[in-house]
Length: 80
Image (tube, one colour):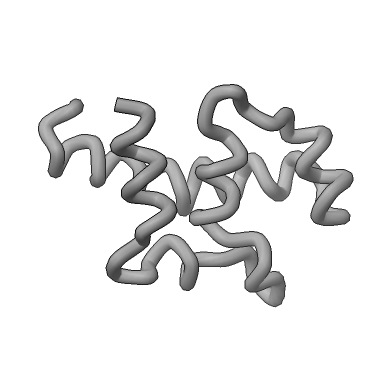
């Protein structure tokens, strides 16, 4: 399952994950965050330091934008 999710994120055929980014920060997008949060997950604190953004901002963006897309993928593939 993990490999399938990783393949889906890396491929991003519709480019939706790449296009969905933090406001004014296109380098912080769902594609990169999902990949970094897949096991073994990079802690929010480390990501916050890497991107120079608060961990709360990253976590909130992930909850609002990335998780719904991840959930939609899981449902479409019959995993959920």
